[in-house]
Image (cartoon, rainbow, N blue to C red; front, top):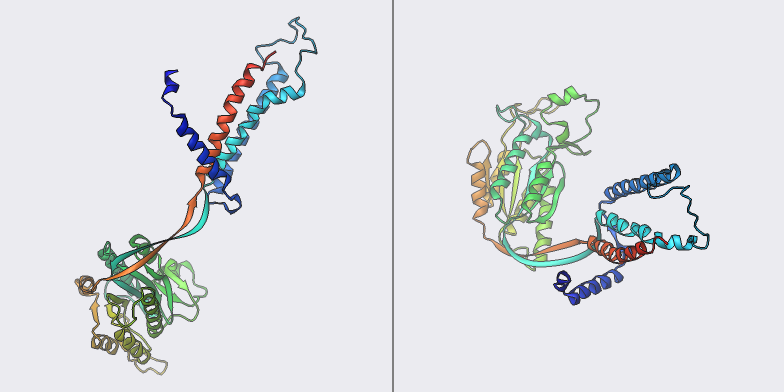
Length: 399
């Protein structure tokens, strides 16, 4: 009795009432499961064990394994004292009812949840940046005497730069580009880990389908097959379309923050490229658009290919616009950092770090509400009813 005296029955009653009310108000039609396959496997195992147990009992009775009875003991029981089928069923109910908590536990294992949109708004001080990484065909050329492609050098430099910026609370978006921009992280986020993983997994080169290449040809190519993404119409290097898309994203974000697109501070764009573009005239116009909005532009320059000059079909040397592009950028207050310089990444890091921080509103959406506790409560409630009923039935099991 001393053991039971420590219980607060009112609190237990309130917990049960609250759980029951929550269960009654639940719309199970809206329920979804993320681990249904696991729950099915557990259910199959439990069902198999129960089935084997039942088979074992039936075989035992058929072979007369019950050690507590003998068919020819000499004691006759009147048919009036034998239990009828309904009475036997009533005494078996507690055992059958154990399927209810087992089923509830199986649903809990399936990780049930409801989808809902819950917005949490907070303000943080941050710098906003779009990062563009060149994934054109020219990035497949070897970089100096390293034996690595410019694309690999660019990817590694980008990841190293992100490691340097980790914990700085930067809001970043990331696209790769060739003739067109392709979003990897389309909108601004502040999650360093997620952003790093997306950047790590991004392709190194975009280009058309390479027909009839075998494994040996891919091994000899500077870009691994797993890092080459087939996108028809790509392979060249046009920067203007990417800059226009960036301007549009900056303008939309400024409106979300209730700021003028031309007065927002702390914004920059980082381009990782060999700057070997073919649309300088269009790019000049977009560079001016970035400059009017106060968006600082920085280039981590991957340098020139070792394959030498490029020539057209008539044998004339093709003049690239790299020097002109860099001049256009520096004329508008931007800077470029040649990756051959060991301090290049540090210089880009420091330049971005000098930018003024801006306070922005972040909206965090929560879309998953766990519901496994509802099935745990069903299990507990079922056992609270089944166990006393089973004990009571056991007292009257034998006549």
